[in-house]
Length: 150
Image (cartoon, rainbow, N blue to C red; front, side, top):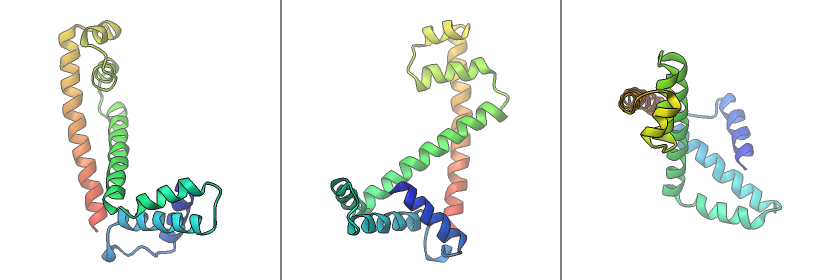
């Protein structure tokens, strides 16, 4: 259903059917997903139970909004990390120390050994990357929200 929703979204968007004055892009996409699920169930697709459970979830606007925001935040975080790696000039060891401690939960002493750094350097690296990452995520989220509001 996700692929079908994406396919329908791209076709409709290219055809100029999205009207920014009528609401957010995310709401429009969620509507497409809702109608895609309805059609799938109506046409008796194979996995009727999964489709019915999905349809029940699609009626809960707050659940859909929560899923949308979670996915948006994951995409923004991933893009921010990629941007930090490519464009920030951050040292590879600094990024590695951050990822080990902050993302993988590796103890600082172990991360220090793996990165050939002191424990203090690991904490400094974590702080630097966290600050830059927080700024990037904030900028990207604001840009996304601005685009959605237009």
